[in-house]
Length: 127
Image (tube, rainbow, N blue to C red; front, side, top):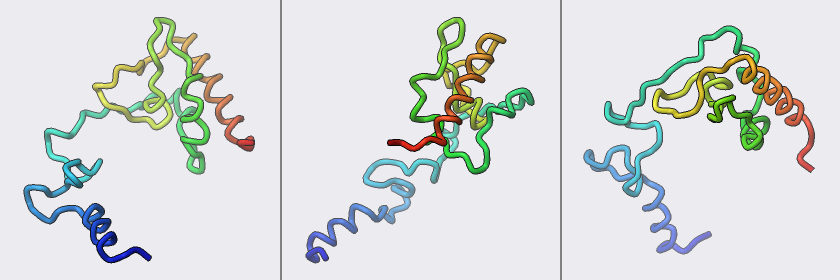
């Protein structure tokens, strides 16, 4: 139970403004994914390569538990670029992403090993 004066301030912070000019904004910030205009849309690219299907997230798999916490161990490509985990694991990314969206044979083997290790580690308890 909070005093009414504090509760009113909390509600004012939590409710978005009702003005049309501020539609989709919350305390001056945009809600991610809501009310996006043409200027905010990003061009997406899809990973339609059938050889990458075994990397995609499974239906019951938790991205954070399996991969996000291991992102520092994600292998780099032969030329030193970071591999785009979002592209290969979720199947979609933006064109403006600077990470690698194509892999050669060596990179594929390294990423395949990384994905397998992450999936095995996700089944183990945290402590």
